[in-house]
Image (tube, rainbow, N blue to C red):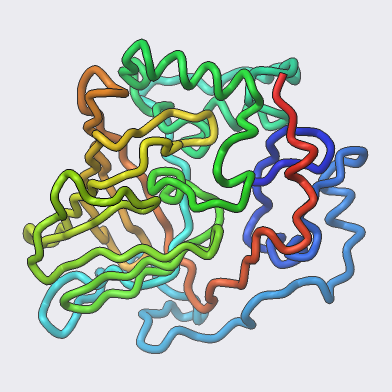
Length: 312
């Protein structure tokens, strides 16, 4: 997610095929439709790893990776969650109608020009799949409203700062999981983030530990599901673009399961008594991106957006 130069409005990230083109063009162009801007770019601006076939991957007769093949396992018999994974938006509750087209909202909604997408996207609103929405405390509801009223200009992603783990789960830019018996490392293309999940049996740090952007994570296997508990967050975490908060009293539990070769499902429970009246759970889905790799993303190189971000 980036903000357009001079507009203070939030724009959605481009698709995977478009990302390489924009690495040197991070300030958006507001006067022309994005499709026209992309079409005018030379092919030489595609900057990503060339296709390289993933060794050992199950393939169909046409040579493509078979996403429905069984999930792979490590030498010790555990499900192997390794791979390059891209977020796939989860539909809303059963029976939720697709919202009709809406006019572009006025300044102060925080939705920007991607209004229809934002109303149905977990990236913009992590509670979109919950029937009754997120169970905010009055304090958290006011804070989220305040953030949105300022066009979400203080979202860490807009300032090249580390994102919250939930926003990284739903970020359009992919992530790479590297799994060993005692440690899982997740490399996020967004802001070049790095997260460690310890699988060696260590306990989480005490409550008075120094808070971190990505907090502290320890995991264990329950059958074929990796259960990760995370505490020690900073007090200013954004869970989504719209600013749903998480505080340093919060705890996150992720239940990660590789359903088949091409699908990773994660159920995420957030328990934060300062921000929410009760714990809540959402499901996030990632799809495998085979035969490719992450690309370099240096957020604050030639970043001229900051001085132009506006609120009301």
